[in-house]
Image 1 (cartoon, helix red, strand yellow):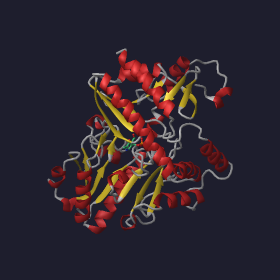
Image 2: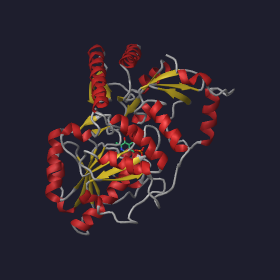
Image 3: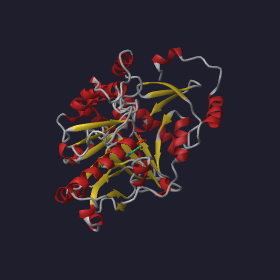
Image 4: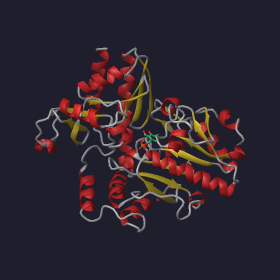
Length: 409
Ligand SMILES: Cc1ncc(COP(=O)(O)O)c(C=O)c1O
């Protein structure tokens, strides 16, 4: 494999380990960062500063939906950068309007709010739900129900709605009135006084929690309960949305729609942007001054997202994601039949998880050494999140590396 556009790599006398040492000194140590420094990429491959190439099945944790340096993406951003990068929300900008139009067209949603990350999209969705509930159900209707094992982000509201205590340790008191219900168990929701519930938040496919799918029957019942009790149903599609599931919205796979959907990650394809899309009846709970973000939907971010959405929200493109998913899934099922340490394969589209009965960190590290980037989800699950543009050959190459590494365990 060669990264053709990378032929003129920036010349630096520092090695990767020099950079890692420098980074360790000055960056807050909040991440379990691998001792790797990536400097460029093309398509499904990235290269580190020492010149080693990797097949990127991490995609920046489900972000690089179009791979690296997709020509249409680079062209759109380059042009916009030389026109207008930012103007604030004191004024409209064309890319943001076009992006909102594209996102709500042929969808269950009517309006968009743009922000800069997934956690911010969740904050917006939670705030919108409480505003709506207070106006429509009464002052005391503030409760938010979240699913066991969920992950919604690191800001206070999103963290409070994240039902994994390891992320919350040291940060109490959290935002009040958030209760955890059991994922895929409708009785767990029915145990609450639904008159007090403002919102129910669900990831249709849990990512950080280990790649677990919501049951269609569960989601249908949740949808019906939300309709009956005027509860805002929020889907967190930050990881599983924007084509990753093989449909533009993950909810399309379940033949139902939430009232509000939170998007980020693949929406910007590498440029930071988040969004909430809402039905008119909910969106109108926000009035001028109720919520905002200086950078939200700035022309540059909106242009990046417009480039991604224009390519991804195309039936042929989404069809190819499904085809690639079938190939990858078949290869993984075959791998499972040969590897007793693999317990399960699950997921949707190009968001697939391999559950092992052993810790996966050493496997991920060895795969990186062999030139394949993967992501963990907890102790025992590896996530495969290739670019949506991944080729059959690249899938076969990834499986080859994975099989070799597992066999060497
Ligand atoms: C489902 C889900 N929600 C929210 C977030 C938070 O997004 P961000 O890291 O952009 O704040 C993530 C990030 O991994 C996620 O996977």
